[in-house]
Image 1 (cartoon, one colour):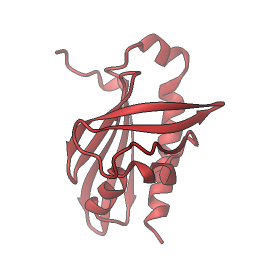
Image 2: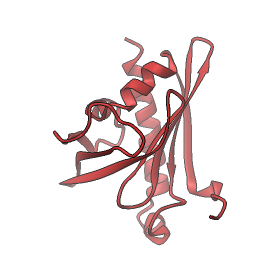
Image 3: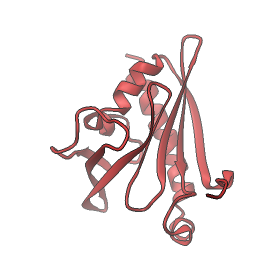
Length: 148
């Protein structure tokens, strides 16, 4: 297995006034993903999605980017309450890293396309750039969710 290329990981961080466990609980519940999704594409979890994710768990999501579609993700990283990540048919990984800091948590969201099935498609469709903007918006929504 080759060493991951750091240039193929889009990463942004944000301080959130909640514990790692509180944030992890939200991330581990697919039904809550649309509450924080900054891309606007996540609509809701399929009824067959588990209420709590675990390593290897599969969960379907109803999505919309122009047109409605469904996607099935599989949890490929799970280290409660520090890290969770999932991958779908495209092969790339959406990952959250949670680090306890004074007064809350440093949350890092990553779009890791090292394992993407088509690196050319990632570049042509500008997913790294587009996803950076969505990650920033997601982290803003996550921080706002816990600031209530």
